[in-house]
Length: 261
Image (cartoon, rainbow, N blue to C red; front, side, top):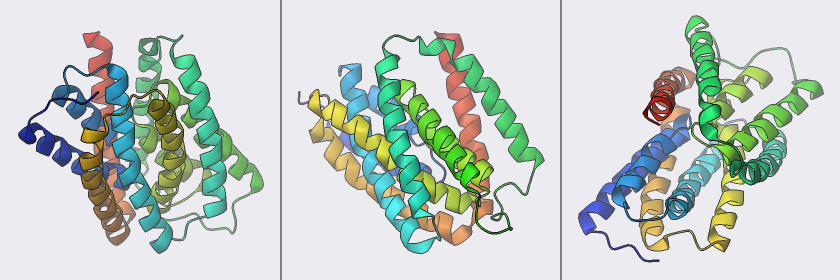
């Protein structure tokens, strides 16, 4: 399928992709902008094609951000890739269950969790400001992170999806006591793994509009690179501010979906 869209529409989609890549690189949640932009820009495309195209675009910015973080931040790559593999399995399982579960039933629960998370972050100004002292993280915490951030959030990504990157940052910072920059960098690696699984599935189904995805991917990659560099330069305080804004936006999006349905 080759969509018939104007050059102006394509340029606006590319701008949305660049902005989404920046948001994703800093704290996750770029899909809150990019997916609605695709729905508006491709009004006659099937939902599967919109979702597949979104994944084909997002993976480039996420991968670029992951490389930037890995080069410049002290990441635990072994834990990151272990969690990523678990997330890949979780996302595939979530995708299998997605067809049989009404996601609207889960939105209220997710919104309650987000409100609790937002209150926690706002009431604890030091959350994620610096990595916790005390030596290496225990093996129990590492496996908890793999199960929660990997399998659990990976399953959520395959089942519903919005805010996956943000949930990963929060889980990694909370469980492994990472600062927000390290948590964001680790989350990018995990997110690449979940995106690979989804993209392979959509590609095999022929559900990616490559004529739209490829130019958008270039802009998403640029946004992801810039976002990662800004987060690394400005530190956890900057990431914290963007995190609060994205959580509020995610709450608004889920609330709208719940009560507009």
